[in-house]
Image 1 (cartoon, one colour):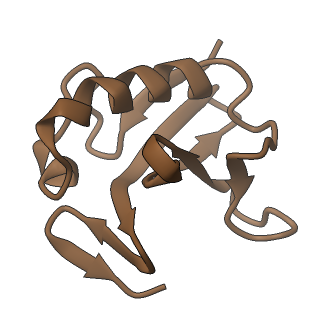
Image 2 (cartoon, helix red, strand yellow; image 1 turned 120 degrees about the horizontal axis):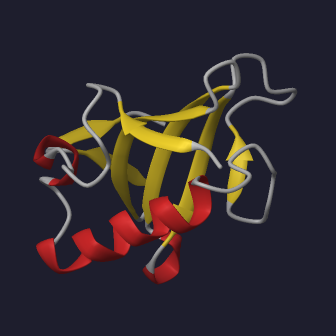
Length: 107
């Protein structure tokens, strides 16, 4: 089993609101639940909606997609030596634009 932490070191149960500013509050529980469901067991197994950000995976950075029309994105890094998943950012993709907090990220 892997532990899941936010970049700041806060446990996932203390979701940092800065990541979620652009996401309707009604989805926050879904996001928390999906993170725990998908990343506590086998976060380094590639699936249809969980992929390394580079191919081949160079620095163990991954993307998890889920939600209505796969609009939510969780970017994370795996530290195999500590058996830990570190959440780097949580965002929402609307059409061709990705937002993390209130900031648009260029794709």
